[in-house]
Image 1 (tube, helix red, strand yellow):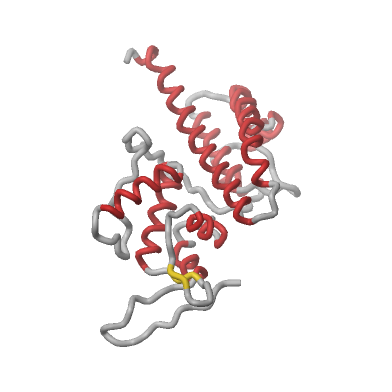
Image 2 (image 1 turned 45 degrees about the vertical axis):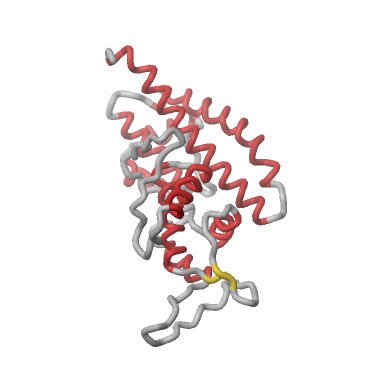
Length: 251
């Protein structure tokens, strides 16, 4: 149950309006559709935001807190940064003086070595509630029926019973359609499936102990750990491919 909304006093000298966790969620959801109350509580537990507390213990957030959360969520979504690096950036920000205010922070999140991770073309990574039928997936991804059937036969893409496709299926199908434009066929993608399965087995060993706990905070930490592992794996894979192509490109 959401915590009670804060009252908004009138008058020029009033204190800044404070928001409940539910109101903060409503502020962030349009830009970050996957954010949840559990996620906001997890970020607080990790020390990335410190909302005020009422005498009864309810969280109350100001606009500075919302800007801070928006920065954290943007750095995770667009630049795949782990919380440790984001925390360091926020510590530098806190030590620089002025509050971030209501707008999006101007601070540029950088990687552990000081690099600014390159942004991939903006994928429409939609919420887990996305449900497409077969015709919808074909229309939105650009794959044809025969390619989709072959992807499913190879296990590269799977549907949720009774035949619905989620946001990840759309991303896979769209990527396959892009690769097909360069002459790569579904049969060339078996290695991707095999490599992904090996990573799943490895990462599952790391997150399973947390995911099995009944504590919501532990489950939130498991989800966050999985997200960071996936992001780091993507960066590692991309770097290894770039290094491997250098001799071919003569660089």
